[in-house]
Each structure stands twice: as structure tokens, then as C-alpha cells.
Length: 132
Image (cartoon, rainbow, N blue to C red; front, side, top):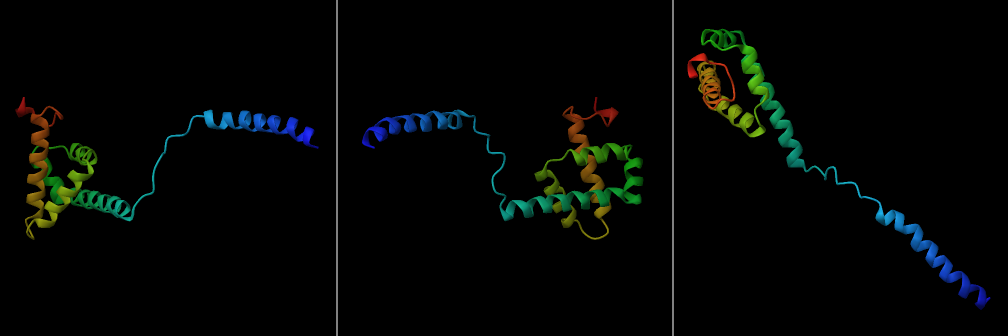
């Protein structure tokens, strides 16, 4: 029995080592994502709510009329709002909250106009022909 265990033990060890080498040598998948914290989930919900609120303001007929009166295509404004980062959306929504009652449309329009003007001056958009 001792003679059999002396022969089988090294063989079993060799097979176990060789069998586990393929697992150890296999490429490990990159961690696709970690756990999402509650704060991150709430932040994502807040950003989507802020985007929806901005879209609601821009969808109003009086806002659309003012944009057209300023010479801005409402489709361009929607595209620019969709391209805003999360921090910019949060800032714009906070500014909508800070506006006094009754002046929210004018303030929002001025903000959108200034935002488009700055991006046009930087060469990121082509909305206003007078900036060239």
C-alpha cells in the first residue's frame, strides 16, 4: 500500500497542478461594474428628472415662440440639451428653480441663448450666423 501511495501521490499532485494551470492562466474579465451605491442611484434618478424638467420647459409653446423669435431652431436647442453633461443639467435645473415666478420663461430663454451663443463662439455649434 505504501508503495502504491508513493507512486500515486506525485501523479495526483502533477495532475492537479497541470489541471489548475489552465484556470490560472485564463484571462480574467475586467470588472465590468462595481456595486452601485444608493447615492449614485439617487443621483442618476435626479439627473433624469432634471432632464425631463428642462424638456418640459422647452416644450412649452411660449418658450418655442420665444426661441423662434430669437432666431433659434427649437430642434437645435433640444439637441444641445441632450448633449449636456450631468453636471450642466443639474446646474441648469437649479437655475430654473432659482428664477422668480413669472420670469422663468424669459430667464430660461436667456440662459439657453447665452449657452448657445457661448458654444457658437467656441466653434462647437453653428447656430448664429453673426458669430462668424
